Image (cartoon, rainbow, N blue to C red; front, side, top):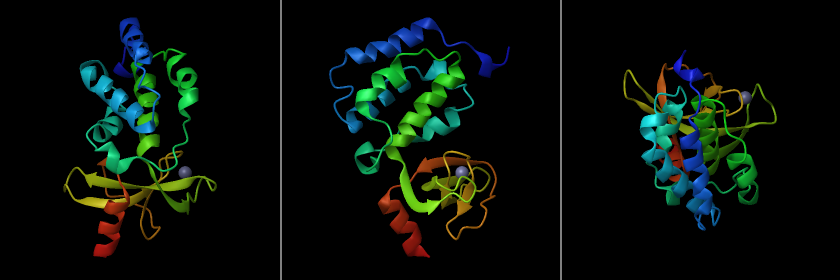
Length: 177
Ligand SMILES: [Zn+2]
């Protein structure tokens, strides 16, 4: 059995669902983010071998007050159903759900459409290339995963850790050019 087929243990799922007892959970996007991150950090040893951990890990230490999205797609009053009602089959699908949710709360839209998905907007992200540790502001589509340089050319600098960007980051990178 591969790690990515590992079944999500019932006790982890039950523990996750118990977050709904916290009256602050759906209070605001910032509270939701903080409570999820706190829970994920406590359960890191159960989740970190997922293939999606690379994507989730970099968001866990951002200061959400500086990164909170102005236009999240998720609606807090629908989260009990979307996030907590159906147990994911595998650890991977659970980590992917957590990842998509947290990224939705920090993503910064660029106003430019993905050339492949047309109606989907590209987000600003910072890519840290593992080989060179160089950090670069790029555009990424969260539907198809396509990554572009700011000038619209294909980004292909190799394996990278992807961090969220906020307006300060964008101004810093664009101002430096
Ligand atoms: Zn796309």
